[in-house]
Image 1 (cartoon, helix red, strand yellow):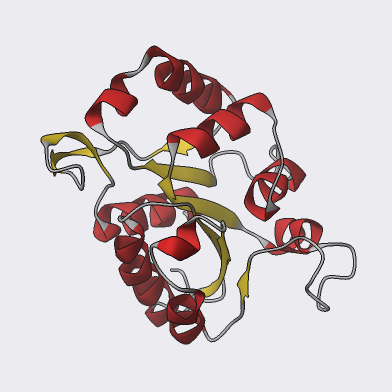
Image 2 (spheres, rainbow, N blue to C red; image 1 turned 180 degrees about the horizontal axis):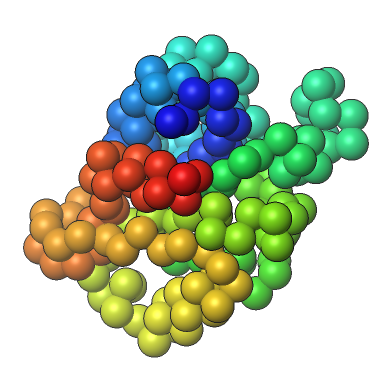
Length: 185
């Protein structure tokens, strides 16, 4: 089902990025072409070489340093993407997306997408501390993103990297992959 599809995976900061690597590996094994966009903060948790090895493609981190996209990586990747999945998605990134802020490649790419054409095919898998997930500002941003047509893959409950148990754990790779398949069906 995924064979021949072009998927862009955004990675924001968070220890849950190791799960994203497992998901990307499975997408590639299923025949999808996967391009990975990482924020600078994401690179503190997992290195670009991991995703380059898994996808056989470069990892994109800046708007204008990619010769294959003379108009900017945000434009080239937006035109190429059949689906955008951001995993993990931080509270910061959701705020940027909900309010139209663009200060790095991933947030600029998000705005450059044809949201009408990709309605239902922009997915975010939040990962954060329980109190952050429960914060009214995050709830407002999630509501706005859903109204904008973004599919939120709800975080689960369990052990968090802040050494507590609660809701905020990024969905498992299999659940995210299933949401991708459903969105592309």
